[in-house]
Length: 140
Image (cartoon, rainbow, N blue to C red; front, side, top):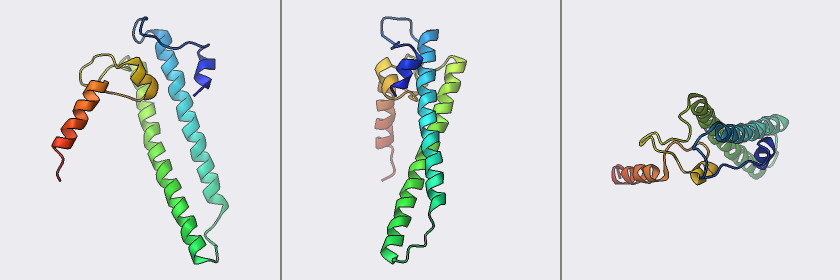
């Protein structure tokens, strides 16, 4: 996501500044919007690709391979659709002032975590706790 640097004039959030100050919020907004745009572009390309070819392959193995490829592509796009919804939710959190704060503890989420996963809603500690609880309460 190199374009974010251009949009924000080389600014990168740092631990030494006030957490979620206006400049930091705009940095993450730009990062999220760019990510969303990339996903939407991929989705458009998938639709064009699916519309181009039919399943008129005469060879059964080729047709099966094509169907498998399309199925995989559609599953990938479905995951991306869900990711877009999470990006939109993160943008709403920026607008309402809750972005960057853990949903469970209300503590700030580390900048390193937000850089790596801008849609994060839990601090690393809360996420790890959540995953441990899932593993111990799973119905096996």
